Length: 262
Length: 161
Image 1: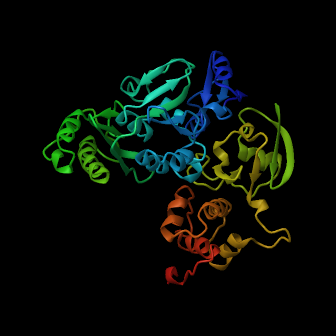
Image 2 (image 1 turned 90 degrees about the horizontal axis):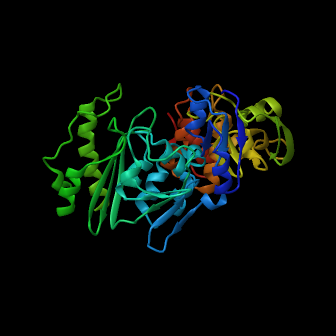
């Protein structure tokens, strides 16, 4: 790794101030960023750790019923403490491996917006609100393409608020080597309709499959998806699977998620 | 350089580190605790698993300064006070849970973390928990068997033939 300075502020305000330096970079659990630094794909002059900020830790229930997760909360804590939203807890329990889940954070995952990450699917399907140090961003506005989000330079994800659906499930088809999602589908059934978010598949990163949402809002069953398909155009094609294969898997995994949620 | 202080295997330690120094480098190079291994250096293989404040982490993917003030446990602290192997280590020996031994420190530390949160895991739970620990010798069978035995369960039913 290139040399860098390290700071570990104890408050959001101090972290925001530390990130005002040019080339400063926020550090969550480091499970993506540290390997990236080792490969010298990034060379920040300063890393600002967010793991010492107690106001960004933990899971709670908001006044409006939403499950609120602090931006620096590790996946293992979400898995253990988000029991009010079982599909979210199950998703967190399936990210990486136990040691990675003890370090990796929800804020880090959402800020990075890896096209094969799990959390973006949960946030988008749940119509979550991404809370930062100075504003709130709706999930529909937040994800803007592979590794691209609405976050400004130095902006920190301090909390994520998940409305809790009536029924929900996340089904992931794992790429057998990395165990990242080759395709992952999060289905969430709310009183006013169904939302379906797909990760792993598209070159544009996480996306909503609106055709399936309409079908499922009328009839929440796997059979309602019969005859629907996703175009292979724009799907990721690599040695693990072609675009057509991923497009096919989107339908399969959506059906499995509906069956698991029903 | 920054002064770093933590507790490792119950002993207060300190040393000077850079911002970029990884926890595993502090343990191996500064403290000369070389039982924690670096295998892949990309947080895939788990040879570097240690406990930080009781939780299993990959020491190759955590900055040393993140462990300021922490309680760290490594493989060197696993044996009992008289030097005899602890239950997990003894089970690895009894059930041939290693061949070359390179992955073993991480396997033992992951097993210890598992048994602390789940004292009687099923075989499937053991295999699931070891997702981030890779062994290129044994095929895992005897590792799983050793961990099951260390948890006090009968391993006759999963004996390899």
